[in-house]
Length: 482
Image (cartoon, rainbow, N blue to C red; front, side, top):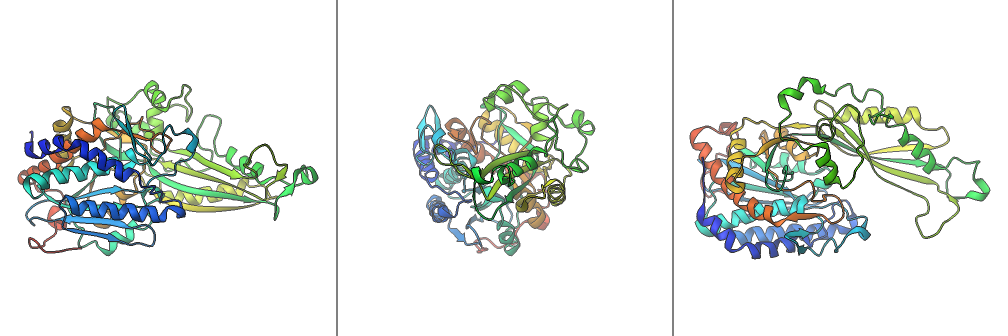
């Protein structure tokens, strides 16, 4: 079944150069949620998005403050007889370090070779923004959207969506919907779209090791005082076994055995080890023995040390024993793993292996369970048909190694399933220098999102959208909600 809104698509094609210019305008905001010095930039980005939503046709738009960064909300409710879709995205971005490795400044949004470069271009501003351009194309040509739409754009996804659950609980009655769509994932290749069938969970921590009360001269005290950096490295080195597996006792107790699902669930179009190494721009693999790289990065858990700091970082050398050292680390969790249990295991492990010569403090930043996607939901069928319209091929179904906290949050608080309909590529350098987004995918993604709205309306005519009878908002036409 093909559903084409030719008027909206023609509008999108005609206005694509302006769309790219506007995408550049949102990428240039240094909306780094994890750094307090950029809080004003995050707020400015939120206000820009709110203003743009009004400009393209949304009449009900608000910027909701939270205890952290704000949530941008917009809604277009045409009729209670139509299905309602929540469109989620995040406008906050990761830090840009190391800055010296960027070919162009991360917040200039340079366009070259058919790509837009900048922090957040792919994760997630480019993918969020193509939905806005799909909405604009529909508003401009038909003055309304094919279905009811509620937009939730948050500014804290990169730091674990700390305050989003409170926002959703506070407005749960007004946020009821049939399904949510999130574009924050990757395609298999530039010409092969993918729908995500599962996400790994996540847990983020910071370990701080403290030794002497102040820095010491290494000539005077070297050999007599345990260096906190060395003690931290000793702790970290014990977290992995020689075969690449995680050495924390009890860590694999909740991990589902792959042998039970490998033949039933692993799709035929997964990337090879060679392709994954090519995308990583490296040649030698590493990790848990006995599994392919695709399995290691999507279905098996992983522990990554994301950063270490301590001591002198300036030019040349300073003969010092630092008073403290810190490491940031993150877990990706497999199906059935409970992040709270992983937190307890890590704390117990650190207490068992820490040297008696130092004090160790563990701080938890984020805990997100793994997520499974309902492949039979009508919204998934609408997304598959939309990809066919936008890319000319049907999507493949992939497991993802990423973690998107909102998927579980929407299900647990609002009771709605999520469709993960991404347009990024594994070569987009997300979270790394020179992040980029293919403008071909920006263009085709707009057409796909236009088609998705129409297919959601179409599938609602032939089948009741799952949970729709309970979740569809019973509001008269034109009535305000949030």
